[in-house]
Image 1 (tube, rainbow, N blue to C red):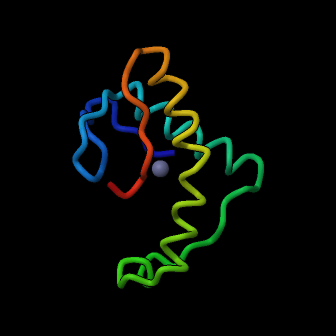
Image 2: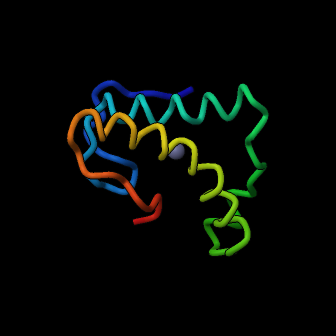
Length: 84
Ligand SMILES: [Zn+2]
């Protein structure tokens, strides 16, 4: 699991406190531990392949749900879309 405690924004540039980022990564860790990660061809996704992008969204679903639990506790607005 990669986590930067000093990172104050999401990779797409939205403001996000590090503890919310930690919650997000914990959601990915849960998926890895449960065998729920779908293999993605990142090169095809970068080139715009909609199926690969869809798989990324599926892989982000649990992480965003865990992130939103912590956002709710901290009274932050929920994150609704990974690619915003
Ligand atoms: Zn993620």
